[in-house]
Image (spheres, rainbow, N blue to C red):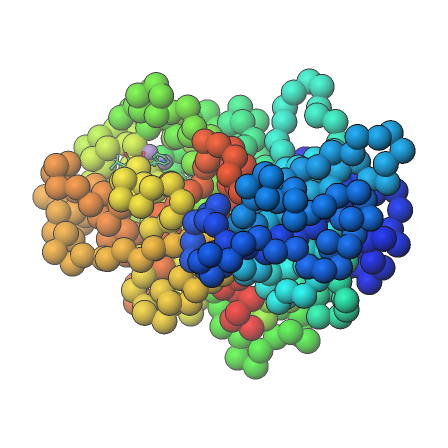
Length: 512
Ligand code: BES
Ligand code: MN
Ligand code: ZN
Protein backbone atom coordinates (compact mmCIF):
# COMPACT_ATOMS: atom_id res chain seq x y z
CA UNK A 1 0.00 0.00 0.00
CA UNK A 2 3.02 2.23 0.62
CA UNK A 3 5.58 2.82 -2.14
CA UNK A 4 8.62 0.60 -1.95
CA UNK A 5 11.98 2.12 -1.06
CA UNK A 6 14.49 1.97 -3.89
CA UNK A 7 17.88 0.32 -3.40
CA UNK A 8 21.00 1.68 -5.12
CA UNK A 9 24.22 -0.21 -5.18
CA UNK A 10 27.04 2.30 -5.16
CA UNK A 11 30.81 2.35 -4.86
CA UNK A 12 30.81 5.92 -3.55
CA UNK A 13 32.09 5.73 0.03
CA UNK A 14 29.81 6.96 2.81
CA UNK A 15 31.98 10.03 3.23
CA UNK A 16 31.23 10.96 -0.37
CA UNK A 17 27.43 10.83 0.09
CA UNK A 18 25.61 13.95 1.23
CA UNK A 19 22.15 14.70 2.58
CA UNK A 20 21.84 11.38 4.40
CA UNK A 21 19.29 10.91 7.16
CA UNK A 22 20.51 7.55 8.40
CA UNK A 23 23.91 5.89 8.16
CA UNK A 24 24.05 2.25 9.26
CA UNK A 25 27.45 0.77 10.08
CA UNK A 26 27.70 -3.00 10.42
CA UNK A 27 28.85 -4.68 13.61
CA UNK A 28 29.96 -8.27 13.37
CA UNK A 29 29.53 -10.33 16.44
CA UNK A 30 27.84 -13.08 18.32
CA UNK A 31 24.90 -13.22 20.62
CA UNK A 32 21.65 -14.86 19.75
CA UNK A 33 19.07 -12.25 18.89
CA UNK A 34 17.56 -14.92 16.82
CA UNK A 35 16.25 -18.22 15.75
CA UNK A 36 17.37 -20.61 13.09
CA UNK A 37 20.82 -21.97 12.60
CA UNK A 38 23.98 -20.13 11.76
CA UNK A 39 23.28 -16.74 13.28
CA UNK A 40 25.92 -16.63 15.94
CA UNK A 41 29.63 -16.02 15.79
CA UNK A 42 32.33 -17.83 17.70
CA UNK A 43 31.76 -17.91 21.42
CA UNK A 44 33.67 -15.21 23.26
CA UNK A 45 34.34 -12.95 20.29
CA UNK A 46 33.25 -9.40 20.98
CA UNK A 47 31.47 -7.06 18.60
CA UNK A 48 33.68 -5.87 15.76
CA UNK A 49 33.49 -2.80 13.54
CA UNK A 50 35.57 -2.72 10.35
CA UNK A 51 38.40 -0.21 10.09
CA UNK A 52 36.79 1.86 7.34
CA UNK A 53 33.47 1.98 9.18
CA UNK A 54 35.16 2.96 12.43
CA UNK A 55 36.84 5.75 10.49
CA UNK A 56 33.47 6.98 9.20
CA UNK A 57 32.05 6.90 12.72
CA UNK A 58 34.97 8.88 14.13
CA UNK A 59 34.49 11.40 11.34
CA UNK A 60 30.95 11.89 12.67
CA UNK A 61 32.24 12.38 16.19
CA UNK A 62 31.45 8.85 17.39
CA UNK A 63 33.80 6.35 19.04
CA UNK A 64 32.09 3.12 17.92
CA UNK A 65 33.99 0.76 20.23
CA UNK A 66 33.11 2.93 23.22
CA UNK A 67 29.43 3.11 22.23
CA UNK A 68 29.21 -0.67 21.80
CA UNK A 69 30.87 -1.25 25.14
CA UNK A 70 28.74 1.28 27.00
CA UNK A 71 25.53 -0.08 25.47
CA UNK A 72 26.63 -3.69 26.09
CA UNK A 73 26.05 -4.40 22.40
CA UNK A 74 27.11 -7.75 20.97
CA UNK A 75 26.73 -7.34 17.23
CA UNK A 76 23.89 -9.87 17.27
CA UNK A 77 21.83 -10.08 14.09
CA UNK A 78 19.28 -7.27 14.04
CA UNK A 79 20.63 -5.55 17.15
CA UNK A 80 20.65 -1.78 16.73
CA UNK A 81 22.31 1.00 18.67
CA UNK A 82 20.87 4.27 17.43
CA UNK A 83 23.02 7.33 17.96
CA UNK A 84 20.96 10.42 17.26
CA UNK A 85 22.57 13.61 16.07
CA UNK A 86 22.57 16.29 18.77
CA UNK A 87 23.31 19.33 16.62
CA UNK A 88 21.05 20.84 14.03
CA UNK A 89 23.92 21.11 11.56
CA UNK A 90 24.97 17.47 11.89
CA UNK A 91 25.89 15.70 8.66
CA UNK A 92 23.42 12.85 9.31
CA UNK A 93 20.35 12.65 11.58
CA UNK A 94 21.29 9.31 13.07
CA UNK A 95 24.04 6.76 12.95
CA UNK A 96 22.99 3.19 13.58
CA UNK A 97 25.39 0.49 14.69
CA UNK A 98 23.72 -2.49 13.08
CA UNK A 99 24.40 -6.02 14.26
CA UNK A 100 25.01 -8.46 11.41
CA UNK A 101 26.19 -11.45 13.45
CA UNK A 102 28.22 -13.82 11.28
CA UNK A 103 27.15 -12.17 8.02
CA UNK A 104 24.96 -15.12 7.00
CA UNK A 105 21.71 -14.68 5.03
CA UNK A 106 19.66 -15.41 8.16
CA UNK A 107 21.55 -12.74 10.08
CA UNK A 108 21.29 -10.18 7.28
CA UNK A 109 17.54 -10.78 6.95
CA UNK A 110 17.21 -9.70 10.57
CA UNK A 111 19.59 -6.80 10.08
CA UNK A 112 17.64 -5.56 7.06
CA UNK A 113 14.41 -5.82 9.01
CA UNK A 114 15.84 -3.95 12.00
CA UNK A 115 17.21 -1.16 9.82
CA UNK A 116 13.86 -0.76 8.05
CA UNK A 117 12.11 -0.34 11.40
CA UNK A 118 14.66 2.19 12.64
CA UNK A 119 14.67 4.26 9.45
CA UNK A 120 10.95 4.43 8.84
CA UNK A 121 9.96 7.75 7.27
CA UNK A 122 13.57 8.76 6.61
CA UNK A 123 14.18 9.72 3.00
CA UNK A 124 17.87 8.87 2.62
CA UNK A 125 19.44 5.82 4.17
CA UNK A 126 22.92 4.47 3.46
CA UNK A 127 24.80 1.46 4.75
CA UNK A 128 28.04 -0.42 4.31
CA UNK A 129 26.52 -3.54 5.89
CA UNK A 130 26.70 -5.53 2.65
CA UNK A 131 30.19 -4.50 1.63
CA UNK A 132 31.78 -7.93 1.37
CA UNK A 133 29.00 -10.46 1.86
CA UNK A 134 27.82 -13.32 -0.32
CA UNK A 135 25.03 -12.51 -2.78
CA UNK A 136 22.44 -14.53 -0.85
CA UNK A 137 23.00 -12.39 2.23
CA UNK A 138 22.43 -9.28 0.11
CA UNK A 139 19.15 -10.68 -1.15
CA UNK A 140 18.11 -11.61 2.40
CA UNK A 141 18.91 -8.10 3.61
CA UNK A 142 16.77 -6.52 0.88
CA UNK A 143 13.88 -8.89 1.58
CA UNK A 144 14.11 -8.32 5.33
CA UNK A 145 14.10 -4.58 4.76
CA UNK A 146 11.11 -4.60 2.40
CA UNK A 147 9.07 -6.96 4.56
CA UNK A 148 9.67 -5.29 7.91
CA UNK A 149 8.74 -1.95 6.34
CA UNK A 150 5.37 -3.30 5.20
CA UNK A 151 2.24 -1.56 6.46
CA UNK A 152 -1.45 -2.08 5.84
CA UNK A 153 -3.98 0.61 6.63
CA UNK A 154 -7.60 1.43 6.18
CA UNK A 155 -7.36 4.54 8.34
CA UNK A 156 -9.22 7.53 6.95
CA UNK A 157 -5.95 9.46 7.34
CA UNK A 158 -3.37 7.19 5.70
CA UNK A 159 -0.02 7.01 7.49
CA UNK A 160 2.61 9.44 6.27
CA UNK A 161 4.96 7.97 3.71
CA UNK A 162 8.14 9.25 2.15
CA UNK A 163 9.95 8.20 -1.01
CA UNK A 164 12.92 6.41 0.45
CA UNK A 165 16.24 5.54 -1.14
CA UNK A 166 18.67 3.11 0.42
CA UNK A 167 22.26 3.36 -0.77
CA UNK A 168 24.12 0.09 -0.44
CA UNK A 169 27.82 0.90 -0.42
CA UNK A 170 29.94 -1.94 -1.83
CA UNK A 171 33.36 -2.32 -3.42
CA UNK A 172 31.96 -3.82 -6.64
CA UNK A 173 28.22 -3.83 -7.45
CA UNK A 174 28.69 -6.40 -10.22
CA UNK A 175 27.97 -9.57 -8.26
CA UNK A 176 25.16 -7.99 -6.24
CA UNK A 177 22.78 -6.34 -8.69
CA UNK A 178 20.94 -9.55 -9.45
CA UNK A 179 20.61 -10.37 -5.75
CA UNK A 180 19.12 -6.94 -5.07
CA UNK A 181 16.72 -7.29 -8.01
CA UNK A 182 15.57 -10.74 -6.90
CA UNK A 183 15.14 -9.47 -3.37
CA UNK A 184 12.97 -6.60 -4.58
CA UNK A 185 10.80 -8.85 -6.74
CA UNK A 186 10.38 -11.32 -3.88
CA UNK A 187 9.67 -8.59 -1.35
CA UNK A 188 7.04 -7.09 -3.61
CA UNK A 189 5.39 -10.49 -4.07
CA UNK A 190 5.23 -11.17 -0.33
CA UNK A 191 3.77 -7.71 0.23
CA UNK A 192 1.06 -8.48 -2.31
CA UNK A 193 0.26 -11.72 -0.43
CA UNK A 194 0.04 -9.68 2.80
CA UNK A 195 -2.23 -7.09 1.22
CA UNK A 196 -4.58 -9.83 0.02
CA UNK A 197 -4.65 -11.48 3.46
CA UNK A 198 -5.04 -8.22 5.38
CA UNK A 199 -7.87 -6.90 3.22
CA UNK A 200 -11.00 -7.11 5.38
CA UNK A 201 -13.54 -9.73 4.35
CA UNK A 202 -16.28 -7.16 3.74
CA UNK A 203 -14.15 -6.02 0.79
CA UNK A 204 -12.86 -9.48 -0.02
CA UNK A 205 -15.33 -11.86 -1.69
CA UNK A 206 -14.32 -14.80 -3.91
CA UNK A 207 -15.18 -12.63 -6.94
CA UNK A 208 -12.93 -9.86 -5.59
CA UNK A 209 -10.07 -12.32 -5.19
CA UNK A 210 -10.60 -13.39 -8.81
CA UNK A 211 -10.45 -9.75 -9.92
CA UNK A 212 -7.16 -9.29 -8.09
CA UNK A 213 -5.82 -12.38 -9.85
CA UNK A 214 -6.91 -10.91 -13.18
CA UNK A 215 -5.05 -7.67 -12.44
CA UNK A 216 -1.94 -9.67 -11.53
CA UNK A 217 -2.25 -11.73 -14.71
CA UNK A 218 -2.30 -8.59 -16.82
CA UNK A 219 0.76 -7.11 -15.12
CA UNK A 220 2.76 -10.34 -15.03
CA UNK A 221 1.97 -11.75 -18.46
CA UNK A 222 -0.10 -14.72 -17.30
CA UNK A 223 -3.12 -16.42 -18.80
CA UNK A 224 -6.11 -16.36 -16.47
CA UNK A 225 -9.39 -18.21 -16.29
CA UNK A 226 -12.12 -17.84 -13.66
CA UNK A 227 -14.97 -20.31 -13.14
CA UNK A 228 -18.12 -18.75 -11.69
CA UNK A 229 -20.64 -20.70 -9.59
CA UNK A 230 -22.71 -21.78 -12.61
CA UNK A 231 -19.71 -23.22 -14.42
CA UNK A 232 -18.46 -24.82 -11.20
CA UNK A 233 -21.80 -26.55 -10.66
CA UNK A 234 -22.00 -27.67 -14.29
CA UNK A 235 -18.50 -29.16 -14.20
CA UNK A 236 -19.03 -30.97 -10.89
CA UNK A 237 -16.91 -28.93 -8.48
CA UNK A 238 -19.03 -30.19 -5.60
CA UNK A 239 -16.68 -29.08 -2.81
CA UNK A 240 -16.54 -25.45 -3.90
CA UNK A 241 -20.31 -25.41 -4.39
CA UNK A 242 -21.06 -27.02 -1.00
CA UNK A 243 -18.77 -24.69 0.95
CA UNK A 244 -19.84 -21.60 -0.97
CA UNK A 245 -23.59 -22.12 -0.98
CA UNK A 246 -24.15 -20.68 2.49
CA UNK A 247 -22.82 -17.32 1.36
CA UNK A 248 -24.49 -14.56 -0.62
CA UNK A 249 -21.13 -14.19 -2.35
CA UNK A 250 -20.64 -17.26 -4.57
CA UNK A 251 -17.46 -19.30 -5.01
CA UNK A 252 -14.84 -19.04 -7.75
CA UNK A 253 -12.07 -21.23 -9.07
CA UNK A 254 -9.16 -19.13 -10.31
CA UNK A 255 -6.53 -20.48 -12.70
CA UNK A 256 -3.37 -18.52 -13.55
CA UNK A 257 -0.92 -19.93 -16.08
CA UNK A 258 2.72 -19.01 -16.62
CA UNK A 259 4.75 -20.06 -19.64
CA UNK A 260 8.46 -19.24 -19.51
CA UNK A 261 9.83 -17.03 -22.27
CA UNK A 262 11.53 -18.94 -25.01
CA UNK A 263 14.96 -17.82 -23.81
CA UNK A 264 14.46 -19.17 -20.29
CA UNK A 265 12.56 -22.33 -21.25
CA UNK A 266 14.15 -25.70 -20.64
CA UNK A 267 14.03 -28.32 -23.39
CA UNK A 268 11.39 -30.44 -21.74
CA UNK A 269 9.69 -27.97 -19.45
CA UNK A 270 8.30 -29.59 -16.32
CA UNK A 271 4.85 -28.44 -15.29
CA UNK A 272 4.21 -27.42 -11.68
CA UNK A 273 0.72 -26.85 -10.33
CA UNK A 274 0.29 -24.75 -7.17
CA UNK A 275 -3.04 -24.93 -5.34
CA UNK A 276 -4.12 -22.47 -2.64
CA UNK A 277 -6.97 -22.48 -0.16
CA UNK A 278 -8.95 -19.31 -0.78
CA UNK A 279 -11.57 -19.11 1.96
CA UNK A 280 -12.22 -15.37 2.08
CA UNK A 281 -13.88 -15.73 5.47
CA UNK A 282 -14.30 -18.84 7.59
CA UNK A 283 -17.14 -18.67 10.11
CA UNK A 284 -17.13 -22.46 10.34
CA UNK A 285 -20.51 -22.57 8.60
CA UNK A 286 -23.30 -24.26 10.58
CA UNK A 287 -20.53 -25.85 12.70
CA UNK A 288 -19.98 -22.26 13.80
CA UNK A 289 -16.68 -21.17 15.26
CA UNK A 290 -16.56 -19.67 18.77
CA UNK A 291 -16.36 -15.86 18.84
CA UNK A 292 -12.62 -15.47 19.43
CA UNK A 293 -11.63 -18.17 16.94
CA UNK A 294 -13.51 -16.40 14.15
CA UNK A 295 -11.77 -13.03 14.49
CA UNK A 296 -8.67 -13.76 12.37
CA UNK A 297 -10.52 -15.74 9.70
CA UNK A 298 -10.25 -13.12 6.96
CA UNK A 299 -6.75 -14.57 6.53
CA UNK A 300 -8.12 -18.02 5.67
CA UNK A 301 -7.31 -17.32 2.01
CA UNK A 302 -3.59 -16.93 2.77
CA UNK A 303 -2.64 -20.04 0.79
CA UNK A 304 -4.51 -18.72 -2.24
CA UNK A 305 -2.99 -15.27 -1.72
CA UNK A 306 0.49 -16.79 -1.68
CA UNK A 307 -0.27 -18.64 -4.92
CA UNK A 308 -1.34 -15.39 -6.60
CA UNK A 309 1.76 -13.65 -5.22
CA UNK A 310 4.09 -16.39 -6.46
CA UNK A 311 2.51 -16.25 -9.91
CA UNK A 312 3.00 -12.47 -9.98
CA UNK A 313 6.80 -12.83 -9.70
CA UNK A 314 7.67 -15.75 -11.98
CA UNK A 315 8.44 -13.77 -15.10
CA UNK A 316 10.54 -11.16 -13.28
CA UNK A 317 12.55 -13.98 -11.68
CA UNK A 318 12.98 -15.73 -15.02
CA UNK A 319 11.61 -19.03 -13.72
CA UNK A 320 12.23 -21.66 -16.38
CA UNK A 321 9.38 -24.11 -15.70
CA UNK A 322 5.68 -23.99 -16.55
CA UNK A 323 3.59 -23.08 -13.52
CA UNK A 324 -0.17 -23.13 -13.12
CA UNK A 325 -1.73 -21.57 -10.01
CA UNK A 326 -5.17 -22.59 -8.80
CA UNK A 327 -7.06 -20.74 -6.09
CA UNK A 328 -10.16 -22.43 -4.69
CA UNK A 329 -12.13 -19.45 -3.40
CA UNK A 330 -15.30 -19.52 -1.32
CA UNK A 331 -16.82 -17.88 1.74
CA UNK A 332 -17.83 -20.30 4.50
CA UNK A 333 -21.05 -18.88 6.00
CA UNK A 334 -23.98 -20.29 8.00
CA UNK A 335 -27.39 -19.61 6.47
CA UNK A 336 -30.58 -21.25 5.26
CA UNK A 337 -28.73 -22.35 2.15
CA UNK A 338 -25.59 -23.59 3.89
CA UNK A 339 -24.42 -27.21 3.77
CA UNK A 340 -25.18 -29.36 6.82
CA UNK A 341 -23.26 -31.95 8.80
CA UNK A 342 -24.37 -35.32 7.44
CA UNK A 343 -24.65 -34.09 3.85
CA UNK A 344 -22.97 -36.16 1.17
CA UNK A 345 -21.31 -34.24 -1.65
CA UNK A 346 -19.57 -35.25 -4.85
CA UNK A 347 -16.13 -33.78 -5.43
CA UNK A 348 -14.69 -32.97 -8.85
CA UNK A 349 -13.90 -36.31 -10.48
CA UNK A 350 -16.68 -38.22 -8.74
CA UNK A 351 -15.58 -39.18 -5.21
CA UNK A 352 -18.36 -38.83 -2.64
CA UNK A 353 -17.67 -37.28 0.77
CA UNK A 354 -19.65 -37.42 3.98
CA UNK A 355 -19.62 -34.01 5.63
CA UNK A 356 -18.87 -34.34 9.33
CA UNK A 357 -18.13 -30.77 10.32
CA UNK A 358 -18.74 -27.76 8.09
CA UNK A 359 -15.74 -26.04 9.68
CA UNK A 360 -13.42 -28.48 7.87
CA UNK A 361 -14.23 -26.61 4.65
CA UNK A 362 -10.72 -26.02 3.35
CA UNK A 363 -10.06 -29.62 2.38
CA UNK A 364 -13.34 -29.72 0.42
CA UNK A 365 -12.46 -26.80 -1.84
CA UNK A 366 -8.87 -28.03 -2.15
CA UNK A 367 -9.98 -31.55 -3.10
CA UNK A 368 -11.83 -30.16 -6.13
CA UNK A 369 -8.81 -28.16 -7.25
CA UNK A 370 -6.38 -31.04 -6.67
CA UNK A 371 -8.56 -33.48 -8.59
CA UNK A 372 -8.93 -30.96 -11.39
CA UNK A 373 -5.15 -30.50 -11.51
CA UNK A 374 -4.54 -34.24 -11.57
CA UNK A 375 -7.15 -35.02 -14.22
CA UNK A 376 -7.05 -32.00 -16.51
CA UNK A 377 -3.62 -30.38 -16.19
CA UNK A 378 -1.43 -33.52 -16.03
CA UNK A 379 1.34 -31.79 -14.03
CA UNK A 380 4.68 -33.30 -13.05
CA UNK A 381 4.22 -32.10 -9.49
CA UNK A 382 1.49 -30.55 -7.34
CA UNK A 383 2.07 -28.39 -4.26
CA UNK A 384 -0.77 -26.99 -2.19
CA UNK A 385 -0.79 -24.40 0.58
CA UNK A 386 -3.59 -24.01 3.07
CA UNK A 387 -4.43 -22.57 6.46
CA UNK A 388 -5.93 -25.96 7.03
CA UNK A 389 -5.87 -26.99 10.69
CA UNK A 390 -5.41 -25.45 14.09
CA UNK A 391 -3.82 -28.81 14.91
CA UNK A 392 -0.77 -27.99 12.79
CA UNK A 393 0.08 -25.12 15.12
CA UNK A 394 -0.19 -27.25 18.27
CA UNK A 395 2.96 -29.23 17.55
CA UNK A 396 5.01 -26.73 15.57
CA UNK A 397 3.96 -23.38 16.98
CA UNK A 398 3.57 -20.31 14.83
CA UNK A 399 6.90 -20.13 13.01
CA UNK A 400 6.98 -23.42 11.11
CA UNK A 401 4.58 -24.79 8.54
CA UNK A 402 3.84 -28.52 8.42
CA UNK A 403 5.08 -30.13 5.21
CA UNK A 404 3.65 -33.39 3.90
CA UNK A 405 4.94 -35.05 0.76
CA UNK A 406 4.55 -38.25 -1.24
CA UNK A 407 7.94 -37.76 -2.86
CA UNK A 408 11.27 -37.65 -1.02
CA UNK A 409 13.14 -35.47 -3.50
CA UNK A 410 10.28 -32.97 -3.55
CA UNK A 411 10.22 -32.84 0.24
CA UNK A 412 13.98 -32.26 0.41
CA UNK A 413 13.87 -29.53 -2.23
CA UNK A 414 11.06 -27.70 -0.43
CA UNK A 415 12.76 -27.98 2.97
CA UNK A 416 15.96 -26.54 1.50
CA UNK A 417 14.14 -23.71 -0.26
CA UNK A 418 12.22 -22.96 2.91
CA UNK A 419 15.35 -22.74 5.04
CA UNK A 420 17.13 -20.51 2.52
CA UNK A 421 14.16 -18.20 2.02
CA UNK A 422 13.08 -17.63 5.62
CA UNK A 423 9.76 -19.56 5.29
CA UNK A 424 10.55 -22.47 7.55
CA UNK A 425 8.99 -25.90 6.98
CA UNK A 426 9.02 -29.08 9.04
CA UNK A 427 8.27 -32.47 7.53
CA UNK A 428 5.38 -34.41 9.01
CA UNK A 429 4.41 -38.03 8.33
CA UNK A 430 1.49 -39.27 6.24
CA UNK A 431 0.64 -42.02 8.74
CA UNK A 432 -0.98 -44.89 6.83
CA UNK A 433 -2.56 -46.33 9.98
CA UNK A 434 -4.65 -43.17 10.40
CA UNK A 435 -6.24 -43.45 6.95
CA UNK A 436 -8.95 -45.83 8.15
CA UNK A 437 -10.31 -43.17 10.52
CA UNK A 438 -11.63 -41.43 7.40
CA UNK A 439 -13.72 -44.44 6.34
CA UNK A 440 -17.41 -43.63 5.86
CA UNK A 441 -20.44 -45.94 5.98
CA UNK A 442 -22.40 -43.96 3.43
CA UNK A 443 -19.87 -42.24 1.18
CA UNK A 444 -16.45 -43.01 -0.32
CA UNK A 445 -14.74 -41.12 2.46
CA UNK A 446 -15.30 -38.84 5.46
CA UNK A 447 -13.45 -35.54 5.37
CA UNK A 448 -12.75 -35.56 9.13
CA UNK A 449 -11.82 -38.47 11.37
CA UNK A 450 -14.78 -39.69 13.40
CA UNK A 451 -13.00 -39.80 16.72
CA UNK A 452 -11.98 -36.29 17.73
CA UNK A 453 -9.95 -37.65 20.66
CA UNK A 454 -7.42 -39.37 18.42
CA UNK A 455 -5.54 -36.14 17.61
CA UNK A 456 -3.35 -35.79 14.53
CA UNK A 457 -5.80 -33.42 12.87
CA UNK A 458 -3.22 -31.95 10.51
CA UNK A 459 -2.14 -35.45 9.41
CA UNK A 460 -5.65 -36.72 8.75
CA UNK A 461 -6.41 -33.57 6.76
CA UNK A 462 -3.34 -34.28 4.62
CA UNK A 463 -4.42 -37.91 4.19
CA UNK A 464 -7.80 -36.70 2.96
CA UNK A 465 -6.16 -34.40 0.38
CA UNK A 466 -3.89 -37.21 -0.81
CA UNK A 467 -6.95 -39.08 -2.07
CA UNK A 468 -7.36 -36.46 -4.81
CA UNK A 469 -3.89 -36.16 -6.34
CA UNK A 470 -3.78 -39.53 -8.09
CA UNK A 471 -0.25 -40.86 -8.47
CA UNK A 472 1.41 -37.48 -8.90
CA UNK A 473 4.28 -36.28 -6.74
CA UNK A 474 2.53 -33.99 -4.29
CA UNK A 475 3.37 -31.82 -1.32
CA UNK A 476 1.04 -30.09 1.08
CA UNK A 477 1.91 -27.16 3.34
CA UNK A 478 -0.38 -26.64 6.32
CA UNK A 479 0.32 -22.96 7.01
CA UNK A 480 -2.36 -22.31 9.64
CA UNK A 481 0.33 -21.24 12.14
CA UNK A 482 2.74 -19.00 10.23
CA UNK A 483 0.26 -17.44 7.77
CA UNK A 484 -0.62 -14.83 10.34
CA UNK A 485 1.30 -13.15 13.15
CA UNK A 486 0.09 -11.52 16.36
CA UNK A 487 3.10 -9.22 16.65
CA UNK A 488 5.91 -7.69 14.60
CA UNK A 489 9.14 -9.69 14.76
CA UNK A 490 12.14 -9.40 12.45
CA UNK A 491 10.77 -9.31 8.88
CA UNK A 492 7.32 -10.45 9.98
CA UNK A 493 4.58 -7.88 10.51
CA UNK A 494 1.39 -8.28 12.51
CA UNK A 495 -1.46 -9.76 10.47
CA UNK A 496 -1.04 -11.70 7.24
CA UNK A 497 2.60 -12.71 6.70
CA UNK A 498 2.54 -13.90 3.08
CA UNK A 499 4.03 -17.17 4.30
CA UNK A 500 4.93 -19.66 1.58
CA UNK A 501 5.55 -17.05 -1.12
CA UNK A 502 9.29 -16.90 -0.46
CA UNK A 503 9.74 -20.66 -0.09
CA UNK A 504 7.87 -21.47 -3.29
CA UNK A 505 9.64 -18.80 -5.31
CA UNK A 506 13.00 -20.06 -4.10
CA UNK A 507 12.05 -23.62 -4.99
CA UNK A 508 10.78 -22.65 -8.46
CA UNK A 509 13.89 -20.54 -9.17
CA UNK A 510 15.93 -23.65 -8.45
CA UNK A 511 13.95 -25.76 -10.91
CA UNK A 512 15.20 -23.82 -13.89
N1 BES B 1 -9.30 -22.23 8.78
C1 BES B 1 -9.38 -23.23 9.77
C2 BES B 1 -8.02 -23.61 10.36
C3 BES B 1 -7.32 -22.54 11.16
C4 BES B 1 -7.49 -22.49 12.53
C5 BES B 1 -6.50 -21.63 10.55
C6 BES B 1 -6.84 -21.52 13.26
C7 BES B 1 -5.84 -20.66 11.29
C8 BES B 1 -6.01 -20.61 12.65
C9 BES B 1 -9.99 -24.50 9.21
O1 BES B 1 -10.95 -24.30 8.23
C10 BES B 1 -10.68 -25.18 10.33
O2 BES B 1 -11.62 -24.65 10.83
N2 BES B 1 -10.16 -26.36 10.72
C11 BES B 1 -10.71 -27.09 11.79
C12 BES B 1 -10.77 -28.53 11.36
C13 BES B 1 -11.64 -29.38 12.26
C14 BES B 1 -13.07 -28.95 12.15
C15 BES B 1 -11.47 -30.82 11.84
C16 BES B 1 -9.81 -26.91 13.00
O3 BES B 1 -8.59 -26.82 12.86
O4 BES B 1 -10.34 -26.83 14.11
MN1 MN C 1 -12.88 -23.97 9.00
ZN1 ZN D 1 -10.73 -22.60 7.12
